[in-house]
Image 1: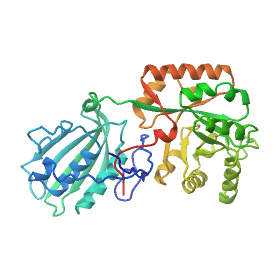
Image 2 (image 1 turned 180 degrees about the vertical axis):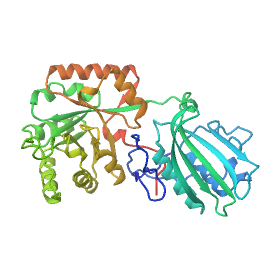
Image 3 (image 1 turned 135 degrees about the horizontal axis):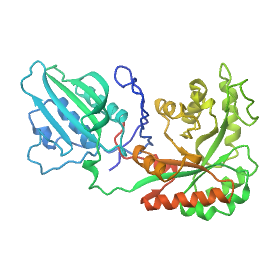
Image 4 (image 1 turned 30 degrees about the horizontal axis):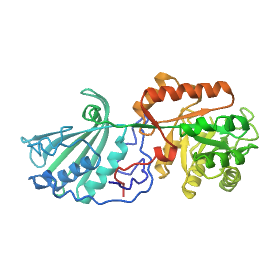
Length: 395
């Protein structure tokens, strides 16, 4: 059963929580054929509850929150992982409290927010408010959403929290992508290790201005390996340090024509590139107006974007999500260690490790990381495969 998982809009007027400061992961998506699910036969559709509450439970079902069809009480605890309390002492409106326990490896708060908003509006409900909650009960962070039924007789306070407990019994293979970036300068590093790359389904990202990028990206394609383009972005603000001539500079105002022309020139040297990432860019990746041009280029050319996080304040990933470009962020370069990899698997819906491979030491480091991932029972996939999903679309 497949759905379209549309590209997320990260912030929406009058609803999403722009005040949240913690970094949220958002599920990137690709277009797949949608199947319509008829939920009219589900127990909660026969229950004496509002259409709005039924719509909320429909979202929970589509999000694959574990559901026990043999459960007798289909209203007060529709799933083992959804808690419901109706405050019968209240009226006009009657207050109902709900809690959705989410698997953060599958969904994030913002994506669920959008699905819920869509469902609420489909039954003419009202979105009242949305707030971040911290250190509530045993949860470090969550979202608190308030909705009113069409006739405003019922108010629903829905709390979204991350909770592994309902999902522990589900056997699910953890997918992760490994990308080798900045290739194309050293021919032997690719030709001598092509079998290693192929056996582990590693995505290879080539610099478009390196001598061997065209030849080596063609070799990668011949071996059924996915290829990407690495673009060099300005590292330091103009006048502070002298950036290298390779780096795409930030100008004020941003010259869209020159940036796109540079991207086209670089891209022609990388065969069948499916996406883009950046190197350097400690300064450029923090400049929203400049990065918006690159994200728009990805959108026009149906490319995904991997934020290499060369700067902690990089805006690339968030811009990609806001502009409906499939994207994820990377644990990159020398930051990879046993603990960091395990943390990445815990906090990212689409975990990706970005490495360099310039010499034998780098290759040995790659082999160590691959062993670690296998011990964690991870499935190595291309970036395109990592970004696929069968969760429902946002219309």
